[in-house]
Length: 109
Image (cartoon, rainbow, N blue to C red; front, side, top):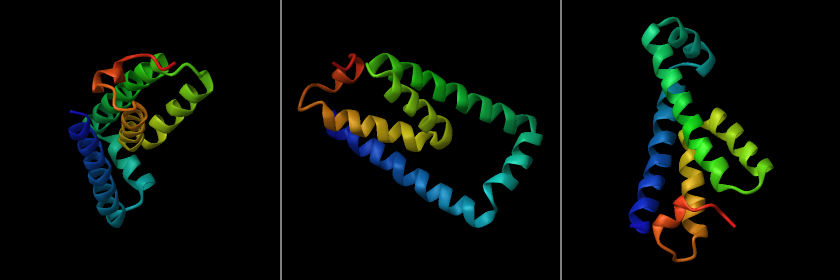
């Protein structure tokens, strides 16, 4: 299962790089933000995404003992979204030292 999760999160990173690259060829993110925010579905999608980032961060903050590290992950999540989520999971999966993937749901020592 650990290998499957690692492959999945590497896939998330690759897909995010690809869609971000393609979108950046279309227009600047700040220009797109104005258009997205003016559309009610665009706002709903952004609110949904950022609430999901906060939910993931609550889990990260619970898991991490160091408050500064947890705060840094909050900034990363809010700025980078799924890039940061996939990176956090990959780091956590590589740090588990051959323990079960369920160790992801334990607080770090």
